[in-house]
Amino acid sequence: MITPDELEQQHTLSTATTRYDELRMRDALASVTQEAGKPLSRPEMLELLALSEVVSRKAGYGRQVMIRSARSAGASWTQIGAALGTTKQAAWEAHHRWASEQTD
Image 1 (cartoon, rainbow, N blue to C red):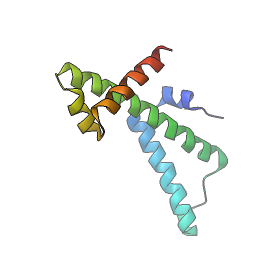
Image 2 (cartoon, rainbow, N blue to C red):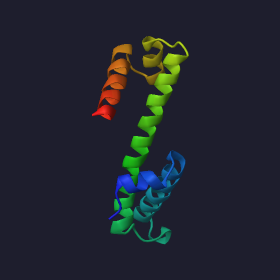
Image 3 (cartoon, rainbow, N blue to C red):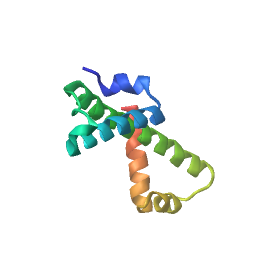
């Protein structure tokens, strides 16, 4: 069985998202019409699930890099919170929680 850790090594965020969308669309179409093809196999469904984790991880890594870049560019936590659609406190806490989890 393929794991998110294996897929994370094989894919960029872009390629993981593309493959995820491809499998998700096939699954959605198969459930709507029989002409669209057969449903995903168990291995494909597990790949889709693992890919969702990979996309989430890679997007999270990118988000943290962008937060650090915004801070380096002089953005305040209030501005970062607004850009993320949250409060400055929530943005600061999420960033620091993520950073401490990476060192653990």
